[in-house]
Length: 279
Image (tube, rainbow, N blue to C red; front, side, top):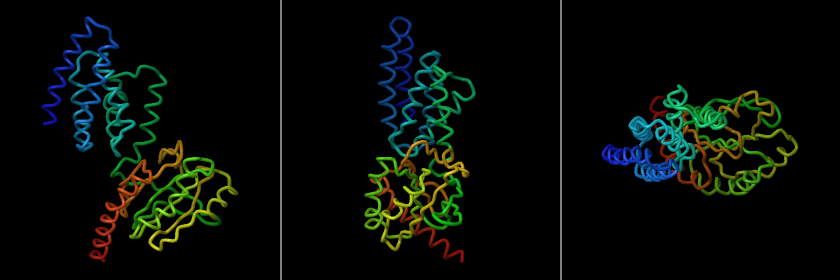
């Protein structure tokens, strides 16, 4: 069905190619952008692999070089800010297959650098990938490696000077107390360098749920390279990692975290069952 939709769109794209020979490019690009929005909406519920294949097929089918460039960039920019969690992988696939090797060019140096940075900061934490291990410091003495295998983990990067982080920090304790009914490790990873401010935050951020193990840590010298590994160029950033270490949630906010909890609970039950059978 999707391939039929693609064929239909190709007829329109071919029409755009003919139209481009006689009309202004802005009009053609506007038509193309409208088609792209309709198309990605039609395949929104498909798998990442299907979306990657469809985008490659579409880009390859447009022969006009300028229209192909515009189409590829439109698809890349859409999936770069994907409304569906995990679809950032489609943008990275477009970048790797069409731009990184020089097949297509970006319109300017800044655009190219921005795209490269986006891919480098996100390719390590796509859904289904093993979460990068980072060695952080505990509040007083010693170090800890997070996330810890064997337990579902929510990894939350925050800064005490971040207004959105402050808002989330007021809601998260109550959320974790009311909504979590299975073993979960919540790692509050401070992304700042102000020890006093961090200490004050820890005193106020408490979780009374016995199912939730709260872990505070930081890496003020960034020895772990967590900024790159988890794309922490701004805060807050929240990930969920399954007990076996794979990423099952990224770019999370409270509403998305709540929707993911039933899935995490089921994964946790299956992991516990398999662990007991292996023992």
